[in-house]
Image (cartoon, rainbow, N blue to C red; front, side, top):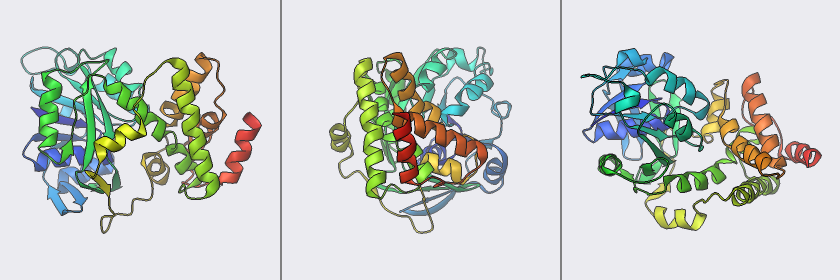
Length: 333
């Protein structure tokens, strides 16, 4: 199989880089300065094993890739960019006849739980991937991946449920390339569990590192609000204990020399001035379910609103103090 990584940022670049390094065929799809760096210099991947420069083939648009029947599309864009990516790739022709949406598997290697549902409207074969992969898009062409001995843990399964030979083949490739990739009959249960943890992505982005007692209190409040809403909706989710049992000592965060992580994916969106952020699909998922089931969600509602505001106005991480955030939440409660 050949892997077409749509959105070769931190997560996509790390997955694509490791697959290519392990001898798999890969094409990285990126935009702007990042694409130009990939095309001219290759992908620079910094890990605890050292720094490698990988001459991974790249493209800056769907038209730059001649799709084959053995291709796997790996969607690794942020959730707010999913619809545009689906629109761009669904009707692309595949050699021998047919389109990508009709013939090719699409793997959603993304946070949040809405991407698979959006994809299934267009693509016949959709797979969910729960991504535990601390990585940083440092500059154009340069990705840092900061865990060892494995680079990440990637639960994988057919959406909405089930497992098949395609999932098992993808998992085998990943596991040969420094990942753990358990195949799950109910991958969305793992993704909903990850969603609860990701509710603090906006908190970190808005207030900075979650270190103070007040910031930690807000972190726990966001998660508790999320689990309460998922329970009311009857949606199952993996627990911290289950995750700890899977992770064990396989995934340990260790700083990589030369990689200044700063923060997670939402923090990085504000730090880069991306102009958009995932909060509508992380905190916003809890807000949506809360409204459907008649539950107040003041913590996640305020986090969603402030994260969206900061992204829209181009504000960097940490523009609001935990005390200011707590006061806004109290007004909404």
